[in-house]
Length: 222
Image (spheres, rainbow, N blue to C red):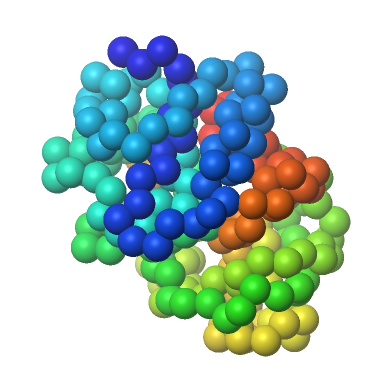
């Protein structure tokens, strides 16, 4: 069994973000403030039924490419369907590109981004712990991710979009008036939260972004 109850997984098989160390440190601190203990790792051997059973939540922090073994995929799917929790941050939308379940889990896939630039986040849901601390219009600088499709899908996926990008506030958006950035859903008895934000190291020192991540962790582990 693991010695911590939140796993921050940072393995990459593609582009590796410079912000991963800052993000891992911030998430460990936030987990601690919520009464959890956290460990950071890149060993796919952590994804076994026995080890996953000890985690209240798993964080995929800007993971890219195929970062799980076939056995790990099977164990992780069972963990989530059985009541586990996943916080997927930023480039985690670009992980496990050939695993259909993961694409279904997030509801979409990464589809590029414009240059890093200031823009505006539109907060639609003020009743969720991850967005309650945020202003209705949040001025932010990031890579404004585009996606292959609307994560809500057309078949009642249960995705609830909490915040969107105002594409009129920056260049390079491809979704128009409805550009999801952060959303949550349930899968089986488990919970999933995704935020597209978090490219730069300094993001993880920003009080509002930290409150966003803390609220997501609180919801996932409640």
